[in-house]
Amino acid sequence: MLTAEEKLQIKRIEDTYYMVPILQKVKAKIQEHGTIKALDYIHEILISSKDDVEKMLDVRIRNKEITDKSQARKSIAGSAFSNILQYIFLKCKEKNKVHNDIFITNKTRDRLFENMVTIHVDGETQKPDMDLIIYSKDAGKLKRCMIISLKTSLRERAGQTYKWKLLLEIATGSNEVKSKYNIDYKAEKMPLVCFATVNFYNEINNPQHRGMFKFFDKSFIGKPIKADFISNLSSIVDYVNSSL
Image (cartoon, rainbow, N blue to C red; front, side, top):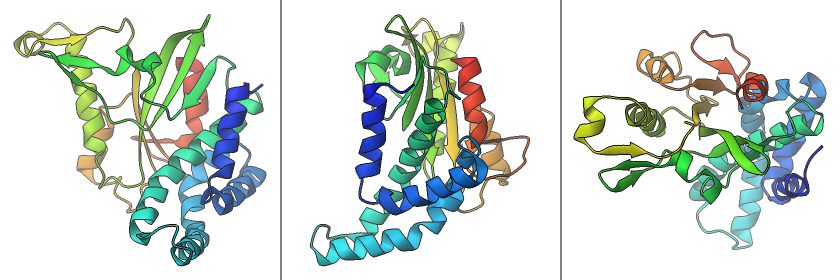
């Protein structure tokens, strides 16, 4: 059962102009593979929607609604990944595949998560690069949360998030580095720090990138592949149900 806010979340995604052709592909994958498994086809969904989105951008250029097509295209790529993941996740919850006390949001600046995502370094703050938060609540209060950095390509700044994860490990341990740099972390429970990609440029087999995945609590890919260093995105449903 979805909350009123979650229903509005779905509607906001459906009303986003560039999501109209993309959601047609999403619904086709849900029909073909089921709601959870559709998460493994986000890469294919984005690729197959490219021509339709380009046509929409051409119309917006002609109507002078946008002036820079390349900038709009770049913005859409990242936002569409986030929107698709949120949409399918909520559809999984609607079908009771996700526990009722678990929620997903792109409102990462919400004060609800402030302590969990803030590390103090000698009076200054360090926060992770995060695009989505999946979290659980108990009696209206935050119970646990999982932050997710979404990247369509590993050429993007994936390293920012795993460096913050290392800083978090230092902040919650007992070590000389923590004392040396006056590192402090106030939350009682650490967030799970995760990474998800669609790997547009087939970079995941690069040893340097594969090593990077080891720093995350869990890494996911929106492609139906088998690998021992990254999980299919469809496994995120079981993961949050058991971890949050």
